[in-house]
Image (cartoon, rainbow, N blue to C red; front, side):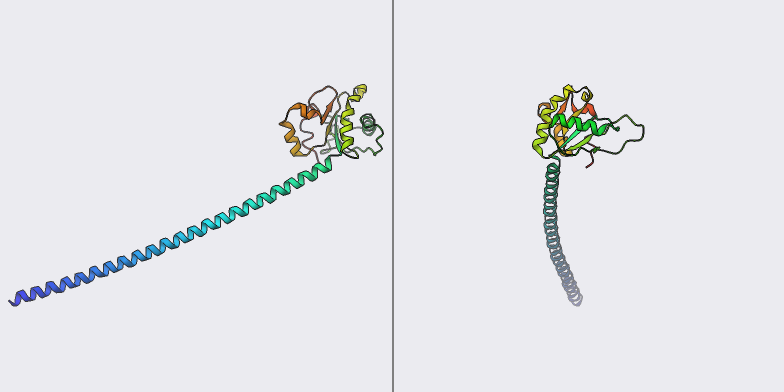
Length: 213
């Protein structure tokens, strides 16, 4: 009887100990679950904060791009205003007679012009004895109406053999030059003159694109 009692007491003790261990494990699991939930909540909060941060950065980038585009547009409009009273003349030889030739040409296409004519070449100065490229000339007029009138009168240059290869075009910004490439030739005709009705590129396709103010 004593042996059975001792056995039962032992088993009861072991059972209680096992039950205590199981409870401890359960409590530990619950604590771990709570910690995991807390961590997940924190991670989600960080993720939400990061998303909000990214969205804020993206909004700032959009604002910066908007301001940059507005600045570029303002610069473009200012440059166009500066160029609207100017012409570009191609194929006037770079020699001592250049100014006189330009004066003659200007008097033909804009009779009565009283503005001083200067040799304002566009682009880097060529090397000595380099006759392969003739830099274009920029001609300053009083206003845009004179530019339109001068282009209209370019047909009169046909009477002057020395201007057979001369081309005249409105002074364009780089953006206008790009737009010009992608539009019908008829629209370009209003801004371009050459005696043989050839594209202005015949005078050096890249010359106008390399202009320096």
